[in-house]
Image 1: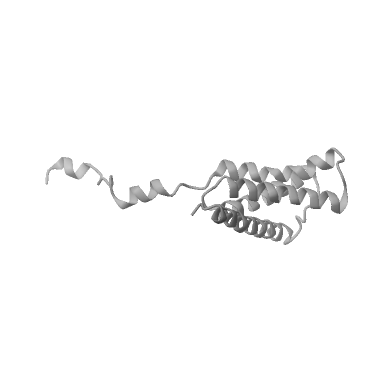
Image 2 (image 1 turned 180 degrees about the vertical axis):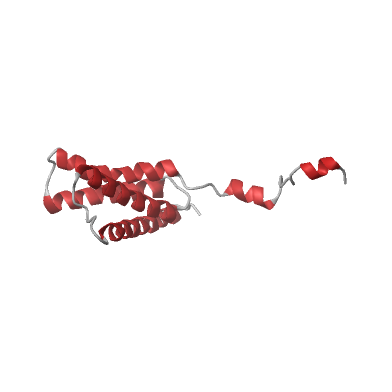
Length: 141
């Protein structure tokens, strides 16, 4: 063994680690951010005085759910359950930050924020399971 062998780090080219890393891409963070930003429909429709009360709420929730499930399910995004769970958390964070910035009430007292984030994550999880079902029906896996 010579001195040059001691200075060179071991190479893992061609190993299972490298091939595994190339086969399993990470989370599509731009997609997570984009779908999470649909949270801004709430204040936008409020500013534009589009609807009010329960009809507005159900319409917005329905549109967002269709967008989340449709985009992830039909675009064949990898890891749909994890992706949409993260989208749900991002959605909750955007709503929370928007409420803090504008002085709105979003249950930010006590346990309100963690509970909201947990509910948004659960809704993302459910949407992810539906998107996964669409992918399986369409023959993704």
